[in-house]
Image: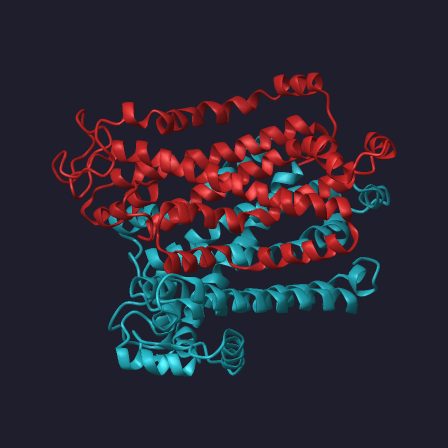
Length: 282
Length: 323
């Protein structure tokens, strides 16, 4: 996948639908960045209003059982979700590259061993492993982030490997190799730039997975007690729905859904921009 | 074919071994006393001493590993303090309910997903296809825990046509038939919750597979021979589209585990998933570890069985044309 910037730009202009996820996702991104200015109350503060009030002008998303402002919770929840997603995905990409690049480049026995490891890690039920690790090491946001990164890399490693296999035999790589460049130099200067771009759709999926796992863990009551999270709001709301409090369920749930839908759409859109031919088929 | 199966069997065994060694190491590097982690937080000091002896925690680490492995091989996953019974017994009591829920969801999503995918592919890029794509995107993105709660709120609280949870009404008596209907009634919402993601996956894959196979030369030839559309689809298309779904199902099983945990917890479904959450809540470490090891082994076994089925039904692998 070697592509000139101008061609990429042309595809970008044609693929207008990519604006949809960008538009629906931007409020969440802005909420995460400017949470301190947007949210009227601190995320963990209770008793800022009466218990379980419907959405009103004072509390536009209503309040929870303990009188916490759900709008503030959702705004700060965006920060937690995106923080966990970005950091854990960066870790997953780093490991994915560290495993995928040598696997694809050196081929042979290295490849065989590394890919068996990928198969094995991929077959471990990752969600239970995450819960197991949280139980053993405590539910701290950093632990959770690292753990999500540690289980997320195998798919990325596979894609990197496949990409490298197709790039390493290309003429420009052969030419550089003939000029006497070291494998390390070839990997970093010539191959890596051609691997990152096709990796973006998979990165989007991994970000979505991280958002899902983070909120899921908090939803089970296993999240960091000092940090607000969409899953935690849902966890609290899951008891209040029996007395008719729908608002605690709707708003954080919509936030998660919008985030994951826009990440999926972004992934689809980007893969169409990078690779218009194969995308048209599916 | 044998080489292929041997490779798959090796991977499955490697998964189980990795999980076992991983739990062994993690329990020992985790903060806190390994003996407490192996006994459970509710254990008495006397019992912790018993466990210390049983697992050989005063012996060198490699001897501990041998002891642990030989315990596992003999089916001993430890003892659950909160249930007062061996972990394996507790898991097996919960297993049938989980199999009922997972099995129903798989059948449901396979049936719905394949039909939707075929219809979407028939008029690819038409309005119906676009509509299905939009629905699939939402179904694919919706978190199971949120969907489950929404279903409870709408169909069990506002419009109370389904029970809020459990598997069967307490104190129900009557014949097998009323019992069966009662369980079925309780199964509807959890099964919808668990299948949603799978339906989306199957629809997507069936659609993509159909579009690809329909563009193949042998399909064009089949039409050119004058076969009816039904004939072409039945004889030449469906097999090539549906067979790969078996492998996908096996891969999905591992991912489904998370959905099972949420669904069972939300609907108080008495299966292994809700058992895990209870075990975490009571800090019943042996039970948590046991469920992790047991689930990994089951998923690996299911993967291997899926490979076996694939080999049996796909002549290309059976004859070695494909590895």
